[in-house]
Image (cartoon, rainbow, N blue to C red; front, side, top):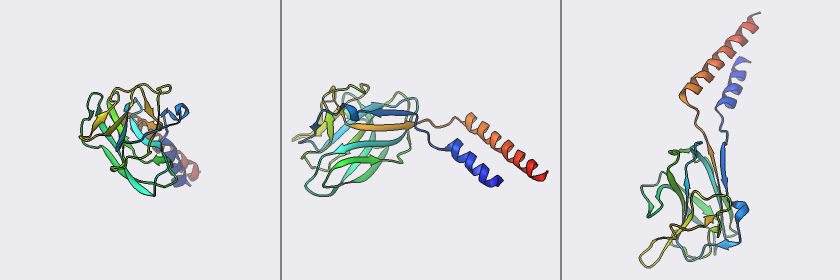
Length: 196
């Protein structure tokens, strides 16, 4: 019984609690990216600085394929400013729809600029939903990559992609220590109760 209670305590104490959500889904005005090979959405890492998940929407495609999703450091004037910090190949079904990249668990530096990049792997047809507004979020923006000599375009746009990002805070070491002490006291209390 004590082991079960301690497990329950640890699950509740150390479970992921989403603290900050950036959601531009309500702002979508019907626009879909076309003629670009990559789409980026920059953002500032919040105080709750561990990125848990990122959701975005893709249009229908000619057939099922894979795309590359990355999180990179971002320079607002030039684009990516370092190697990817996170990278995952995700499936894009022919019917399109929401793509959820979960279990990212990437700790970022609060206040630093990053971008989520959707690499369409040279596909230039309809792809990522975006909006000609920043109604819900204005601390980052959408940018697009293409051209004969490919470069990042619209680095200073006032547009966003349609996305939902969830972040959580990593407990401070002192907080973890305190929770550990509470767990020890809890187990001792259960053991004493059991002995009587």
